[in-house]
Image (cartoon, rainbow, N blue to C red):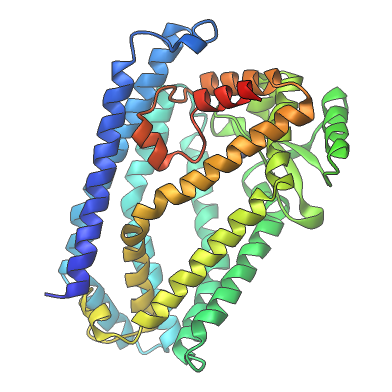
Length: 414
Ligand SMILES: [Zn+2]
């Protein structure tokens, strides 16, 4: 038995068991608190709204758990049956070069896992989200999105992957991983830069925010903190879902503020400004840059590890490949990395939560009041049926944002 495979299976099942245990803890905890609205929210959220948020939380959690266990026999079935090896042999027999063979191999496997995930995506959108009144998507729009998504990943992912396979195939004095890392970093920056101007409009209609007091006050806010803005847009998020959001995207002169129409409708002007001040806070406090640097360092570390593994026959044996190849190495790496790094997840959650506290504080300071931020948070929680009482261990492990109560308490201490 292959030692790497044994180690991987230990991590894989530990990940699944820990995830299920945390989810089970969370469901129990949430249900235990279902009789009364937490004290702070008693005037702001009705018992009916609160219990709806609990039902929504539990239903999503149970569904997520089922989906993650349904994947287990499929994943191991493909791995242990030698499917990957047979696919590899078949594609090699077609006589294309290593790059095209590699692309075909990875595209086939990705398409297979994508197809297997489709029923879960459909159920989540058209059953769960529908039941709680969030879904606005029609089947037609869902199919159009699907088609555009596939086309984009072929057009953008295809050439990138071909370049990666080429670098790996040519070794380049053992430094291929460095070139791949530089390439990935450039692609990441490029996509981040053009996202709001070229990618987002493929899926959504962005309209410049109408002249008026809201727009004036946003510019006033940006001037006050020397924040360079090159456009404020309202986005028709409501055509897919009533969940609301706001974000900054793009780099340089493509940098834009995007407000979901659902958010503009639900929040008052001071609350909207506070939410935007929070988002600007992420930029001013260099959270975006830190996040990019951390991700970049992680991908460099991952590529270094992969460069040590590509020459080891046991690495390929683990997935039953008879012949080593860049595409086999990439597949094994992508399918195993998640399990090996799962236990590091809280580290990134901790950093992200620290950033959220800082951005909240920034918003309160810039607005010179904390009430708009607090009221904005309460409304967003209510409208999105967010979980008010997650199990502390669950939120510690998974939450990228502190819980609403933690954020409000921190704001009240300022
Ligand atoms: Zn934030």
